[in-house]
Amino acid sequence: MLDWSQWASAISNPASDLGELVWRLRLPRAAAAWTVGALLSLSGCLMQVLLRNPLADPYILGVSGGASFAALFGMTIGISAGMIPALAWAGALISILIVFSLARGEGPWSGTRLLLTGVVTASGWAALISLLLTLGPDGSLRGMLFWLIGDLSYARLPYWALVILLFIFFICLGMARSLNVLAMGETTARLLGEPTRKLLWLVYLLASVLTATAVSIAGNIGFVGLIVPHLMRLLVGSDHRVLLPAAAMFGGLFLVLSDTLARTVLAPRQLPVGVVTALLGVPLFLLLLNRARVKQ
Image (cartoon, rainbow, N blue to C red):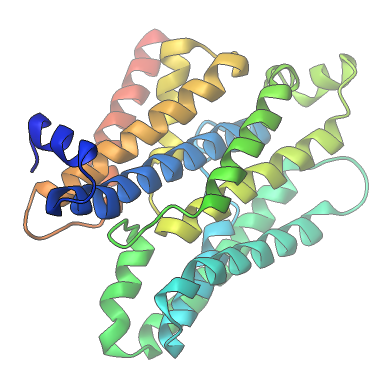
């Protein structure tokens, strides 16, 4: 592990051996970790407003299942590693379209129909993923499992992911007042003049795109999109004008910290970062639940 003087030397001298390590490996991986954490945290905030359920997370509607199936299918047939993110994004898009087309229906918005459609779709993807793991070659099984758990070992930050993050972030900031109203309930939002049906579908699509982008970079990293929005609501309140930037920033920092632990706690072996986020997230979430119970 590098100390501060080594970091300063590496950053100021990119041509050195240490500079090559930092600029080509460490910084791109840290940037990918921060971006994925911010994507998942923003998606978690939106999903919890969309479903009005504090247990909602970015993966609840099956987007990650489609991405994982497509990525694992690519690994099974031997597609190059550079094509896996694009394949995962395509699978996530297919899952988004399936859930949207099946849940949209006629008449008023139904969060229950959306949730049920997403859960059933996720179960279908899970069955297909199990089939791939059963039939897949033994040589690629380790990489497939790491993808399912969530791993940043080979992650690099594609510029399009950063563009998507910034674009949707500013859209969400512009919608912050509408999100605040929507969090009070659909009836209240409708009485205050919000076009609830269009707004809810827009929130679903934005959250799904955020999740698809995160999964395409690093696989299924759990608990970030569930824990961070809860924690930020305790620290900064429920106003989305403040909550969204705080969640994005802290979600990125949380995943960078988790990835650092994944690299160092059993060095030279590396853990999948999804294992670390789960180990940190479970006790933290139980602590938040207990605190909420005590306040009640």
